[in-house]
Image (tube, rainbow, N blue to C red):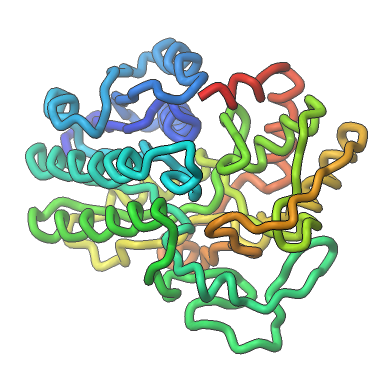
Length: 362
């Protein structure tokens, strides 16, 4: 690592996760010079560009799919790869290109790994819970408790799954979705590059990211999308699983990653710590759509939720990551509760009428 000020590159810096991390890192009091790259493909990204530049963060227009764009970036000590198409329906929904998905999520990562090899920079990949094998998750026997699915504790669980969530020991065998496949392949390549060319690599598999300013829509950013839609009286649907909204996800505020990242950056290149880790709020920060609806009704007046009986491809009833290993190894735990995350999103919604239409315009 360079002496004095650490130099950091964040890809997708004008997206929700990238911009939130940049602001949190800039504000934590540790000397860090941040530069970011973004292709501004998401609606609203220009808003983040302006606010980041006001903090003295350099934002470079570029596309990680283009090797020449990456080759021209300045030398840094660490790269955080936060650029991705994060929708599990990407490439299969008839609205997006499977080739573009692979080029962005996998091809872009390869270009970044070549950058790290040439510049001797460390690499952090923000991965996803959707790298885990779908059949075992879809086949779990569920019971309904307080309007939310919970695995039936009497069943024989697949290895790596418990009532505490899905651990790193659970299978990543296909099918995991095209999106999940691009991420797990990126994980493998990152680890191989780090081993072959002796630069540090950390893989953080994150739960659903959520917080104020997120550009949510039905396939991603569900907590933000639901609250903004509820406030604006936009149509909402319970899709699949009996149309009751019992399906459960955990959530994590991106800024809570920063203490973990600082610890990972301080590790020696030959650290013996595990390179792949789940990072999430776990069961304590999980909620069903029905429970989220109840939360919205307590803040706003009630509204009708429409029902669509058919499941979508790759839908699973319960996806909660078990962060126990991260808590034990890194002494890390999230600081922002799910209640505070929801309040933050709703406050932002109250202050930014029309945010939903901006989010959906991409």
